[in-house]
Length: 221
Image 1 (cartoon, rainbow, N blue to C red):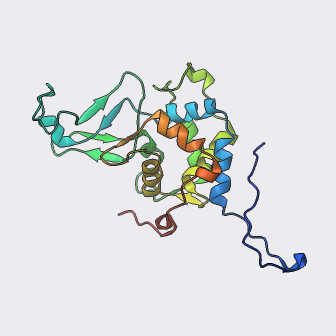
Image 2 (cartoon, rainbow, N blue to C red):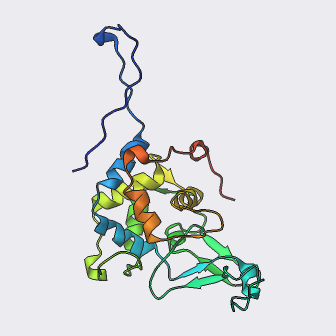
Image 3 (cartoon, rainbow, N blue to C red):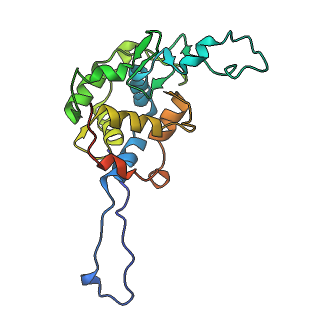
């Protein structure tokens, strides 16, 4: 069972009779964050292992570098493509294509069918659960694919966090939510396990206020 935070109350005018006092409940965003924090961490490993990637596209210009740690090279700490033996990053992009023709479609992008503008909760949860699981890099322990069935509570909580209480979720909104997980967003294209789990298990009181831009309609060209 989820433990929900007590409703927020507006400041009351001194001397106002109790029967005339007004209670205003917190928005559903706070509730969804609190629900996320109550889920077993193991359930979030199952989600990260579905969305995580072994490859991440970064700065295409870094492909010109020999990566020999030359002291005067502006790309010495930049890479065009990062690779790992196990899933390590959730890309904050849906698709990244280099000028030389190399391209990468994020696993989460496959949840949206061609020309599909958005997903509702049932579609999102069903398609997320259907993604192939592989034990990611970062969490302690090990889960096999047979042990990685996601609970409905975890799916509900993750949907609540990503949708922020909206009835649907678009690819653009998914990108925004993933970018907000990054501790340092500048030039960073991938969410790693520490940022992912810290965001989802953050205290309700420490949650970042939702950007008003997510309330605006987003048109996908």
